[in-house]
Amino acid sequence: MWTDLPVEQLAATPVGEIATTAPPQRWHGPLRQLGTHCHQGAWVVCGPRDVAQALASPALGVVPPAAPDGPAARLVARMARFCDGADHRRRRDLVTGLLPPVAEVVTIAGARANHYLRRRVAVFDIMPMARVLPAEVLARALGLPPPEADRAAALTGELCDALTAFLPPGKETGGAADAAAAELVALMASLGHRGQERAAAAVSILFQARDATAALIGTTVLTGTTGLTGTGALAAPGAGAANGSASPMTAAQRVDHVLRRDAPVQCTRRTALADTRVGEVVVPAGAPVWVFVATAERGTGTPATFGSGAHACPAAAHAAAIARQVVTVLEADGWRPAGGQRVEYEPRPNVRIPVRVLVSRS
Picture 1 (cartoon, rainbow, N blue to C red):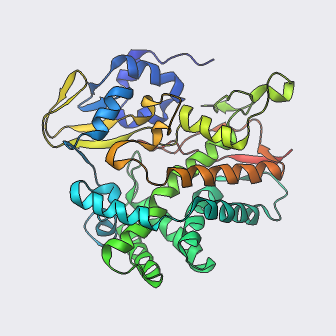
Picture 2 (cartoon, one colour):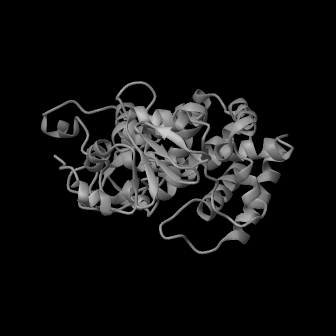
Picture 3 (cartoon, one colour):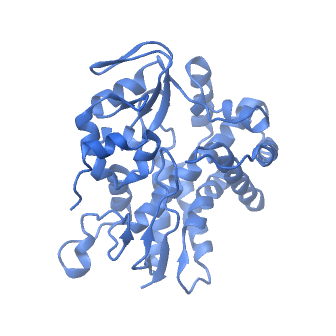
């Protein structure tokens, strides 16, 4: 059983490192006890009530990814995820109108997972597959032919790696990101998604799915593993089934468990556009705000990691379905996490992405 992090240790941890400093169940409790508070110059929002209030507040604006002006920065700035108000509502409607049926996504995800497992006989790392498969699946479901869909997934990876946050920041990749953005827009135009906003909406479906769904796949595969070292993996209910102590969870149950207990997205950032009351405190105008969505988990309804309010994830069902199908195919083919591996996470301020997940045939 995990023990909570001491509050003083949590207070000494830079806010951008909290999400990957330890398994979430070690610091969620202390963070909720602290409530919404100022943490080393930034405001931290946590707990079901305050998180819901913050996500619903028009006075807390989304934070665009830091990038120099250029085609990539302009493309991402047109995505619904990175804007507010009327622009956000219009762009979100475009995204929801483009999302493919979940059943189609499930079918394609199964086929792609089987493709990646073909001819595999030895221990291998599933994370390269997990990082590209969600975007490949969604690109195919949007209508791109397989070669173009695979290319779109690779370009999405270049865009994500260049524009999403790492700790410390990565090297400057603006040129590569700009080229990737231009090619992605051209691919979407080939489907009839012409115009800057419609192309950005189509690209955003791949962009938002890439890292978070990879994290969900990797963490779900690790769930319930024994023999891990380092930061370890989540011990799920039913993990002792091999010893007859409980019934094993299905892939769907494990995905849901991870979403609620070791969520891929732990927090999201906002900026206070004006003095804003959140719970018992007033966040001053101009202050950076970290909304720890995963601390709002109640155990029912849509998992809190998908957010709420205007910016709630529009493709929550798609992400969960892709992860369930990939895990199901892996397990049906006899692949299980390799024992004794050390579990480490990419240095992200908000997403818990395993660096590697080794699997072997049982």
